[in-house]
Image 1 (tube, rainbow, N blue to C red):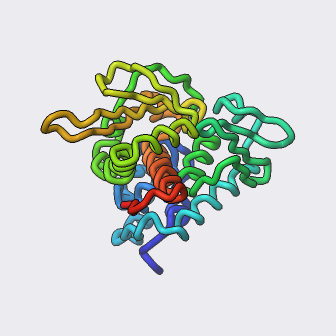
Image 2 (cartoon, rainbow, N blue to C red):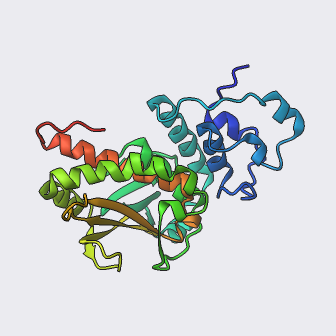
Image 3 (tube, rainbow, N blue to C red):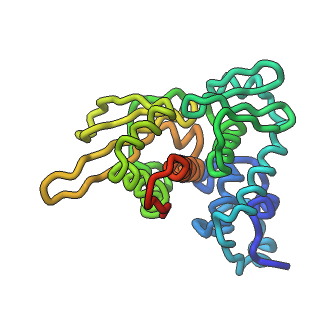
Length: 273
């Protein structure tokens, strides 16, 4: 049997209780962490010894491929018919009508029907669709507190903080530094608001990738011998409403969307990282 299991195959090895004893908010999030090589299968206290021995040489598959992302999205869509979308609407800050749950994703409507079908006012990639589905299925519905933290300070975020910077913050910084007018236009498209949240940044923007998951993009302009900086902050409830894996995917998806818009608007010489 192949040891390169996909997230759904790993998920089937778990008791699917979402007990959180592994440090992840859901069993699906834990399966994704094992798939990516961030955690060992043995971190789940309920996997029996026979299964652990069978998959002792489990190797993480190459992540981020279109096929793997599509598989994960399809799996989550299959879970939607089992979900009370009216209850999910109350929990997630959405609206349920005409057999559809509609959420505001960066100011645009994103809908899922009772069969798992998706519809959106803007093109979104699987890196965004997957955390949206996770949010609908497993989000705790906690109201944001206004206490902000960088990705590395979210529970279990520190081991992936460097990769989050490479996949999310640096691509956004590149567009902001080189094409500031376009960057402002894109943020306006995403319904972002300029705010002062005490980060001592030159400019900060508040946006809502999900109704109860706000984020701050803080941008420091270059000064004298210091280069510019761009960092992202999340409300502390992100750990409960989405989890660190979902936050990572959402940030990566946002950066991909910004890069794609830069290309679509004909920025000369722009090549995504």
